[in-house]
Length: 163
Image (cartoon, rainbow, N blue to C red):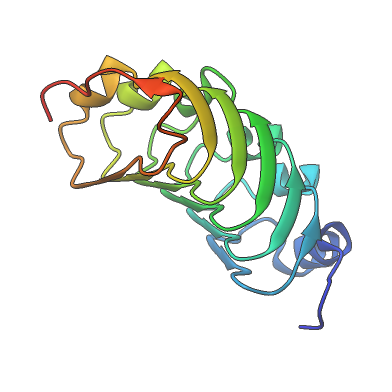
């Protein structure tokens, strides 16, 4: 793929080709720029979405919340910003891997992160979160990889709980 692909145009073409049956999409490290397009919400059978290592901008896309079969979400090493939706994991009940590291997310770490009992890998390191680490993260009984470091350690407080 060529540098600086405008992702919206590419996803629109892909949608026509695969007729919404796509289960895995790997655009890792392709110099893709722009916002995560709403067209992603049409891939209703998507299980794995790998968009790390690009130049994606904007906020966490609401389109991702429509992907209820998603098990792996990798948005690491982009330029995404803003606050994470407070209840975003309620829409992703099968999510096992969440990698949002090396972005510019800010605000509080959503307490809903601890309510997804299927999470095995959680990496939200190297962002600009503030506040406390939600104690609900201690409820993640299947968790075997947790990376919160460095999350602007001057602004994060609290204990994780009984991991």
